[in-house]
Each structure stands twice: as C-alpha cells, then as structure tokens.
Amino acid sequence: MQLHISANDGVPIYLQIVNQLKYLVAAGRLKPGEELPPIRVLAKKLLVNPNTVARAYRELEAAGVVSTRRTAGTYVSDAGSPLARRERLRILAERADALLAEARQMNVSLEEIFELLRQRDEAMQPPPEEK
Image 1: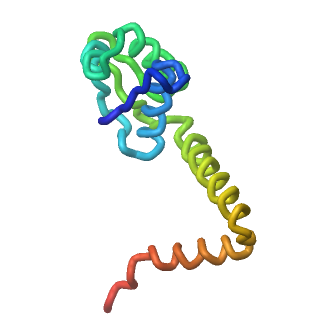
Image 2 (image 1 turned 90 degrees about the vertical axis):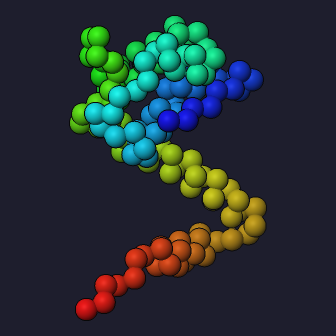
C-alpha cells in the first residue's frame, strides 16, 4: 500500500490519508477484511505524528470504510465500503469533468466524445472465445 503525503498540498495530512485510503478501497486495491498497517507503523513510514494517522483511521471508521478490532488492528470493512460505489462515481465524475473541459477547449462535440468512448470500449472488450 503506497500513500503519498504532501506537506505543501494545502490539504490537512489526515485528510490526505483518508482520501487515499478511500480511493484504494473504492478501486478494489484494498479488499474487504484486509488489515491496514498499525497506526505507529504507518506514521513512521509517512513521517507523520501517530495522532494524525489515528485521526484518519477514526474518520474512516466513522464513514464505515474500516472497522477497528480492539487489540487486533484496523481492517477494511467486511461488507466493503458503503461509500465504495459513491466514491468510484465521484472519482469518475472528476475525470469526466476534466475530459469535458479539455474537449471544449479543443472544440470537440459531446457526440464525438460519446463515439470515441464507444470505440475505446469496443477496443477494450476481450476477444470472443473460440469454439
């Protein structure tokens, strides 16, 4: 699990941790039941105060993304994140916004974007199985 923290980001460090862990869960890179690093271990790795990681874990637990088992650690919620679908859609919405903004700058119509997406989707489909 790789997290990247930037002190110059303008976003509080605990929120950077929360957002990145939510993304990892939503993207399926952290699976339900998977254990997160202990607070002190992650704090040492990120070179931040353990209280910062503890706050991030509390936020994630309040959102239902993780559950904490006393003396056993912090785990991705067994049911997966109740926010997982919403988070995935939020991430895709941000990318769609960027695509639309760039298309407008290039004078590409919405219909052309749809056609491009259809073509790319077809190109990404697995080949039909041979009989």
